[in-house]
Image (cartoon, rainbow, N blue to C red; front, top):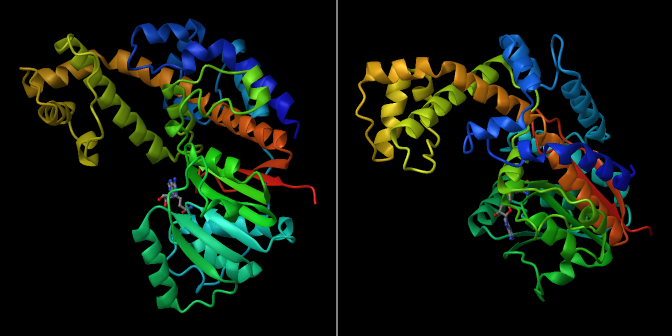
Length: 404
Ligand SMILES: C[S@@+](CC[C@H](N)C(=O)[O-])C[C@H]1O[C@@H](n2cnc3c(N)ncnc32)[C@H](O)[C@@H]1O
């Protein structure tokens, strides 16, 4: 893939819409709605429930405005990332105690590593948790493996797991309890360096992915799968490549949070639940704006699941009590308020659905920037989709090898 051309084309599409994706809809409402072209909003309002769900999946039913259809078409094309096909089937013993998600991930990671790491003898896993990847790599490939994690309790669980299952490990496996940080770490740094060394990071949160890349400049092979992009700090963590710096996008904390939201293909029930949660949250927001105008932004927070299934009044009273506030309204008045703002809460939902269409494109921009950074460090780089997004939505893998 030509990362530079892809990054330039994506930023060209995204930049004109930065007022839309870089800000929170709710916190700036109703002014934030102005970033959404009126014809987009009118189209979204014309959709029925099935049309809304289609929009949430990136499919535009009926007659969409040409500008929206063209933009979503371009974003879809530019975020199409090749798939890694293949799965290293694990045995029942090997997957004992693993979730379906973890098993899915490990089977794909092992299949990806096999043909690309023939020259590797030693490997390190950054944020290796209980060491499942470590023990499977040690056993499958015979590598000497160091699994680093700052969480000692997780590593203890991993050691006990190995004892309990009496797993044959293969190559030597060590757990190292440490926090991997930028800058010199004489005990850890040598583990990341050498042409026969692989550096692996599976769901490295936020900036940990970049720490891994920086530490692994002397490694023969790097596999990084990122997550929690909302933990990144701009400009420290984006852009990191020269090309990225030439074409920067105005990422904000709200835009970073958006990149972690993409979850394709919600079931009908999941979509209905999401709508219900938003309906109560948005109505509560409009209520608190009306009743407590002196407060900048009242955060409703996550409520117990059952509260979204009952009347708005019960939800609102629970949230108000938690926040130490009182609206002075009866249950009947609260329910009547919710009904009175329904057109507005639907508008808010529709803007959310439109804004969500930018999520994957923004995530891909962050990863293209990292891919360019790895290329600039002299690696040969691939960017592939590795996991089924329904199972593990942060599914983009950066793979970097030295040309040996
Ligand atoms: C999202 S989990 C991923 C765990 C594992 N790789 C997996 O895929 O199941 C991130 C792990 O990284 C560890 N971690 C986060 N920051 C770290 C750091 N700076 N140094 C070492 N470990 C870290 C956490 O303790 C946690 O176990």
